[in-house]
Structure formats: C-alpha cells, structure tokens
Length: 143
Image (cartoon, rainbow, N blue to C red):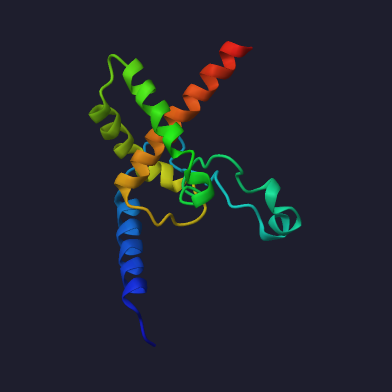
C-alpha cells in the first residue's frame, strides 16, 4: 500500500487533532459536547442542491473557500473592522486568545473532521461572527 505525501500530511494532522481533542478538558455541565453542525444528507442535496448550498455568503468552514462566495469576503472584512472598532474594552488580541481557547469545542460541534489549522479556524470565527452581528444589528434597526 503506498502513501503519497498529501495523505501522510493529512493523517499526521488528524492524529494531532485527535490527540489534542482527547487531551482537552471540556468544561461542560453534562461532560459531553454534542455534534450540532452537519452536512446535508446526499439524498436531500441531490433533490435540490440550490436549496442547501449558500448562494451569496459562506458562514463557517464548509463553503468558505468557494470562489463564487469568496467575493463577499471584502464585505465581511469591512464589517469585522467596524465591529472591532466599536469594541472599546475588548482588544483584538484578547478576542483571538479567547476564541483560541474555544477552538476545540467549536470543532467538536461539526460532524466531520475540519482540515483547517487552529489559527485559520479562529480568524474565520472572528470574521464570520462580526459579519453576522453587524447584519443582525442592521436588520434590527430596520424593524
């Protein structure tokens, strides 16, 4: 059985991820984290893909790197800058540190392995959360 360098690299990252996850102590009340973020089952996806695939913006890692959605990244970054500017007591470094502590817990919510390094995951959470908070704020003002 032959292995190429890509599969070996992915396997190594998987082992590191599993080890880190198992060594991590989660501070949950019931001691368990449950998977809450799933891919759409293939049968549903086949029936109407447009209903289950983002058309304008990607939130989270499943569709993040799709080129047709990545165009929204500039809007998401602008929203992140505005959000961070509005936070007078919380500094960006502190936010990164806090989310880094939660990264393994966030990963545990996904039903499949996320092939992203921790830093990428944290920055993705910051950008997406900032964008969503601004979107909700604008929507609330319009109501």
